[in-house]
Amino acid sequence: MLSFDVVDWTGFALFLEEYGGFLRKYELVWILGGDVDEEQGVESIEKITSLVADAGGEVTGTDIWGKRALAYPIKKNSEGYYLQANFEIDGPQAQDFERAIYADQSIIRHLLVRDENPVAIADEEPED
Image (cartoon, helix red, strand yellow):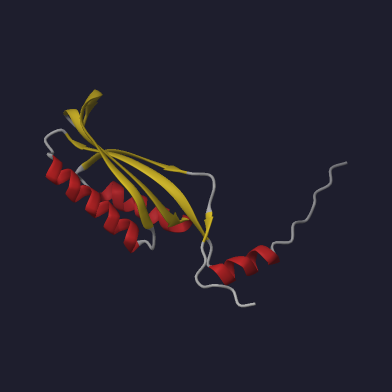
């Protein structure tokens, strides 16, 4: 006979209500078309930083990998300009963020990966 344990989530719900949820760490790597220069790459990083900030997150690091040959053509590009960003954002906001990435026509490919260790959000210090 199977038995199932009932989980009481009220403590967790109170935690979320008090502290506001969890920030999750993400890494985004995206590729712009091969005709892009470094200035346009910096503009793209600023745009991603703005999208993260609009979603209530914070960018923790960015990197420009530069122009590289693609293994196969993507949207008629044989080269791509690679960029990378690390950021923290609330889990549900990540879906809206990724929709904005899909809408950006200058990005020919992207990969958004979530770190499995969330960071608790503390809106304010708990009172003793």
